[in-house]
Image 1 (cartoon, protein in one colour):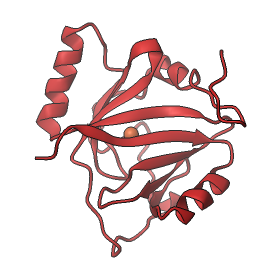
Image 2 (spheres, rainbow, N blue to C red):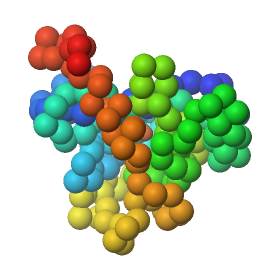
Image 3 (cartoon, rainbow, N blue to C red):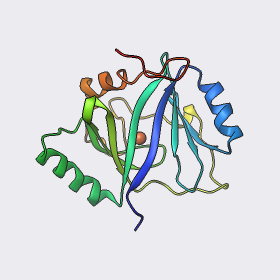
Length: 170
Ligand SMILES: [Fe+2]
């Protein structure tokens, strides 16, 4: 069992191509691409960074790795015990096949508990946006959770990055 750690960070990018080019130069590899995101890796984890195609540059979320599905579910319970509601999930994502639950943390910081991230190597077949289509009304493999709450969507807009890299006060 791996030690607790940050699993991945999801950044919405105004210029996804430019950011992807920079991170590729650093050695990150593309795992999958959807209409909304590029999933890139620097290890056997399917993704360590996710780059959103967006009008604004901001923090989509930070994900904490949990050992497995049971840990994610117990984590949800613990968060509820402390007054934090689930803002999306639980569910299982498409790209990465990881389980998820989203919360709003301190100062509405968008956070994810995740686990069971798909492990890949260089033989992994990169899939394109047309390969990632859900049936209407479905946003994950299980299909048991409604979509992200208005609260977590609003939280993602709070952590804006300016062109010189500093957070803008909203
Ligand atoms: Fe995530």
